[in-house]
Image (tube, rainbow, N blue to C red; front, side, top):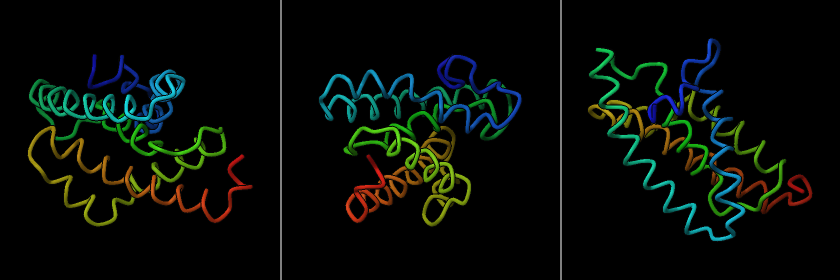
Length: 148
């Protein structure tokens, strides 16, 4: 249930993208709490829960990095949005940037994917999310008018 984020991972088309979008169900209430450290704590807690859930799901399905596991995309979106101003253009920019970095997996994200079990499933997406977060921070800083 956790690994597939309530079965979102079984979406018939682009489950990773659907999982990234579904992360907004968690992000919006966290952001409305108006305390960025709650977002950090939730991201860290979901990361470790995701490592466990992804490992268990891999063992259960007998497949490395199974497609239905999307908790990594959920955590990735939360990390992509950390400490950024809240606006829908910022959310959209973080979403697109995260999906691109998650697909391309620039170093060291691709290398992190080779870590054993749930660690590899989760770590590469967190690295992609860090890249996305930094890129969107630069966009907000250099072109704040684009992010309103």
